[in-house]
Length: 311
Image (cartoon, rainbow, N blue to C red; front, top):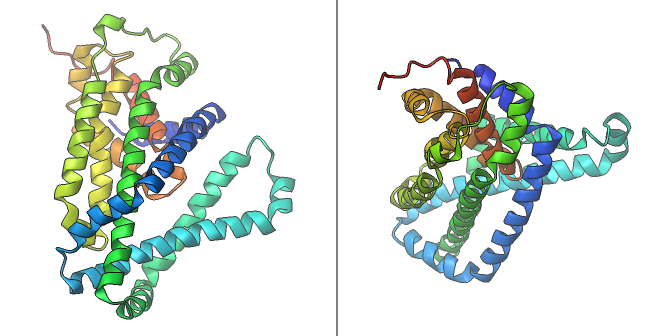
């Protein structure tokens, strides 16, 4: 069961105006709420992350602090570049891009800028790492420790935002998936409510496990590049089961769901593909919608083709 068509459908539907509008109306207010909570609890959170950082040897902290700070510089470079292009090219952009397509253009522009700076950092990593490491060498241990502690505190709130957004989107899945079903699968019939496979308990269970694993894998956050892999896999774990069940429970029977669940490679591929969007701020708002839509299309395309064991 190839997932290429599923990913294409996911991109198409995620970039449609109804989904873009829903994502912005959901993600932006939630981001503001978590920003406010982070502002109020910032000092206790930094003290908490600083306690963990104190266990890390200075040589490791300095070496991988360069990687963490380099990631912050990358984030700033992406946003500044986007702001400069929009500011100086605003007239040209509006001349060639319609108001209806502006949101789609902005997303593609952000993705292109993020890809460009990522390639630059990858191709010139020795230079970037060396320059940041030189700067870190000027700081005493306490200052560097505080800087990395603040970045890890920001990572905690970033993950809290991603987890809560994932659960909120899962709870409101029915409205926009019903629209996709009526458009692409008009003959599909919804499963009776009493036959729905529960998914919210799975979502809350996986959210708890996600944060437990995040704490257990804390030392790996200081291993360059491997920390990105660990974070993406944890995000994929967070949504894999609950999002599959959330999409499948509307139109697939329990027997069909059990048969589809055996295709773990596909389920992990969809979850990991969507989770990559979480690496890009702002674009991450669309990640849960992208995941849910991909699972929905995959289920709808394959639920009637799977072999259901005889009862």
